[in-house]
Image (cartoon, rainbow, N blue to C red; front, side, top):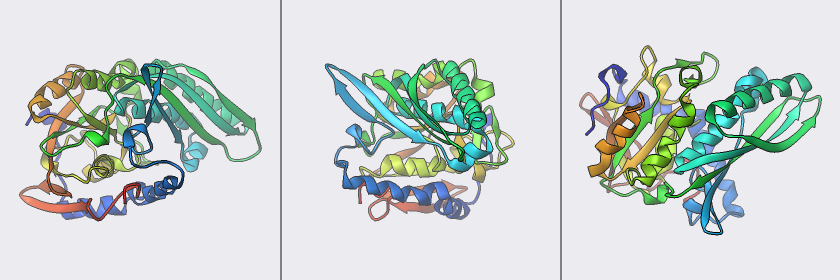
Length: 326
């Protein structure tokens, strides 16, 4: 296994406590509503939608990634500028997790002028940091709580997909640990610290995909780290064992809160075991952390271990996060 930077490691919490916190997390339990799309979308092929972070669409010899995000209304109401940033961030991360390079953003915004202006300011700043243009969208002025959705188009050559997960692959965790946890929402923000490098950093996923250093990926989002990993595994129903003692955690951050947080920059990847060190080196060369923290297993169990103790987080043969593959 590739050794993570020692300064990135925090003492791991008890495994039983981790299981309880993750399974009760609203970002995990609330994902079951996604199953409703099975009524009108073919769920037999996650690469082309709806199972991965985006869907791959063939365009006359090229391949595009398309995706979209609706931002939590309480977050938009509390911090419209931050919500604007998040709408670009979430879409760009989804494109990256498919092995794609972001090319364009569009949005749909409804609300009051003052809040809408802050949303647009946040989107504009984020688009500049990620080097992706906002090319259009829809705006409706209304005396109501502001709502925000955004959508992205990316280009991909070597798609990363949950359909490619196989036993024996290394499970890698890549992240930026330089940031702060927001006190009001479970977001770990490294926007300020990565402002000059975000455009480069988010395109590293396409690099490792094109170089054959990774075959599947998932960005860590509202489900938190372990919930997002379960989403990566649930299509093939292969399990994994994760060593929490090897899990990178930001300094001065509660490890339990980190495991249910939505970071600015954090991704799971699976890679051929013999390429794990090469995959890690790509991120580490750019001052990011990338550690092998586990392996994909033959069984359907997603297990975690720490301090010699082991617990089952989920049995993917009988349980699901999204309900798409039940």
